[in-house]
Length: 230
Image 1: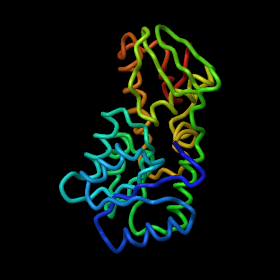
Image 2: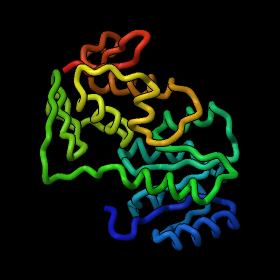
Image 3: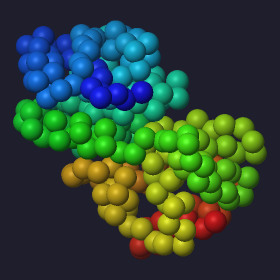
């Protein structure tokens, strides 16, 4: 849980870069943990539950893609900001598809990194003291707790899937373009492809719709985007 000094985990095998990141992020007021490879990073992310993970993609042994996938498979919703020297769009799309929350290509400025970190940490935390609930079909979405149930059973969603679903169900009947959804939910300048939204909607439909091929609630509006129909 995020306190006065949020805890960040830096997973980076370049010792010089890692040392600089840790030092500068501590100067910015964060508590910073460090792991030099993917296996150690995954272990610390699970054991220490940091508020955000800064993750290099190209790591020895378990790479960054595998770390993100392993976290999401364990239903860990910790925000993940991916760093990579590889700027290919395919890498960005793959990282986001696996559940990463943002992507920075090396070299990057410290100011941009800190801005991305603070933006991710500013996203509203789920507050169990309230109980705004949206129901559709056999699905129940507790907006303030970030909990989703289907037919009474909990549904495992990533943090980004929850945010996208929460945004749509909070605005029933409104049509949103893919670009608008990226701006609203990802909260950063995305220079890849809006197919990211299609991938996330497809996954939500599989988990929540009776028939994902004929969705009743997460509806495609051809040529315009998506609409939530309760």
